[in-house]
Image 1 (spheres, rainbow, N blue to C red):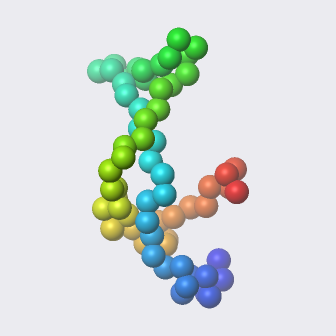
Image 2 (image 1 turned 60 degrees about the vertical axis):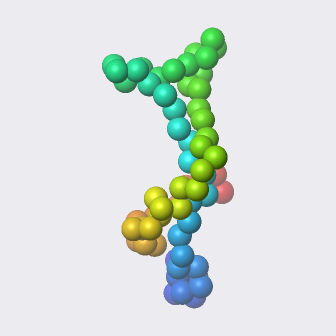
Amino acid sequence: MSDSINKEYNNIRVWDLTFYRFDDDGNELKDENGKVITYRAEIDCQYLAEELNIEHLEVVEDER
């Protein structure tokens, strides 16, 4: 990553979080088709990024 990008974009926020449910044995809750049921929380989760810095991040290549 170039130095100009690091200097301009040096703040981190949460974009998206996905949750799922599981039982005491670690088995995911699935729908009738066997797909894991996922959830989103409609609350502010920005606190999760408070201790992160750019060096902690890794680009997700398959989503670009």
